[in-house]
Image 1: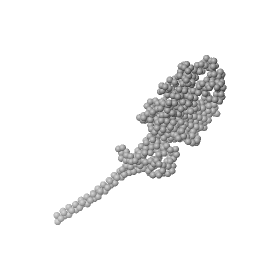
Image 2: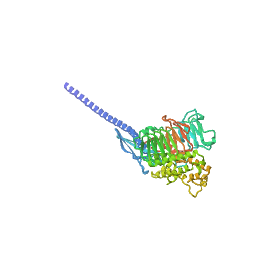
Image 3: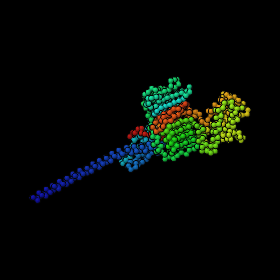
Image 4: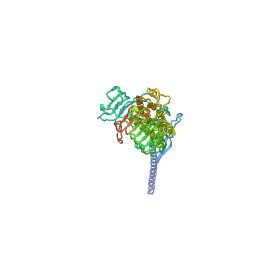
Length: 603
């Protein structure tokens, strides 16, 4: 009996253990299953979260590509991240039709909205619509991201300065929406200066009939009424209104020095003296100071100059120029109907926009050309002698019978008489120096600057040519004075006409005669500087001008006026036309304003 009870007790214990083991096994299985579920959920959450960061990496990668090439459309196909799990995909539709939901559209250089996967004209102008797909593990995510250039609230101001704005003589400021329309927009001028101890924005007459016409507001951040001074005669100027104590105008703070330093490893431009230096579809850099005597053409390119930049010739095309020093431009930046962007100029130093200087250009070319150098040197000596003689003697001494007549005829022979006998030129120089120089210029590559200089030299040469035998000197000068004939043979006629008054008129004409290009200096685009902007000599600026002092540049005295960094000086004959689209684009795609995300919508 006792034995049976012990066996029963042992069996019950064994059964209890077996039941406990079963329960523990069930619990363990449940725990393992729960752990696996939690691990999967945790992993899925991690993957889903990681896809967002992979998308951000994809957008950052795309922004870099678009900054380098505004028309980039290669995209990415399952591009992996370094040392991180995950891939991203961006694919572009470049056909403009048969759109798929996964297509991206690049309209960064477009002036109008374009079609896309979401329908007709759904991609904003000057923007890129990216469909960004990201995959991490088993998770995937897509988003439609619109990127474009950051726009600053600068319109409707054509001129913005951190300090003073000085204007002298006839000055005109107006505005258009873009170069392809005649739609007018306001174009004011503004200074962010808060100084209260004198005028900040000023305009002064140089001649009695000078006028200032500003098709927009003139405003200043300073609260002082005397901070704007256009003179006491309200009929001499036309301004929409004067505003004081206005908010400061924002502008992009471009770190010009850093941009240049980061891009000095690009190849240098091949400069063509008096010819055309063409920079195409790339970035170019130049260590030190760069001087271009001729035409500079940018074709979707950016030029980085470590030091000063001087261009005596034309600038055209689309792209950007970064200069670490001062910029001197003497010539044209042509306005072309097929160029919607212009040149974006970023200068850490001051910017001088001046009229074409043919004399300086000729000297630059001659310095590198031994054949031309001797003739140019002699020509300068002859012109210096001509100037001294005409200034130091009365007209009667210059004409037939006067003490200087023979000398002036020898000067005329040196300048414009070919194949002259030995001993008939001034001081033993060669004869027909202007003709020789013009012929030598024909050996240089064709360019607008070379062609103009060649034409201008020929025009000056005609003045010193020998008068036709059948023409009467007195009648020739009189007809020229009445604008009834050209100036061919004019100097010879004046020397022989016997009329001191007519001779005096011709001498005055010679004083004004240079190889410069009068009234034909343009700059098209956006000008941004940490120094000052100085524009004069009939310069026309098509775009906008910004001057923001960063404390790195000194002041200078120009036209008896101290010009400080952050100042803008507009001289006699300057015309500035604001192009509102330039400001929206920062001077052109990939050139000025940084790219950024405008919207982000999960798909």
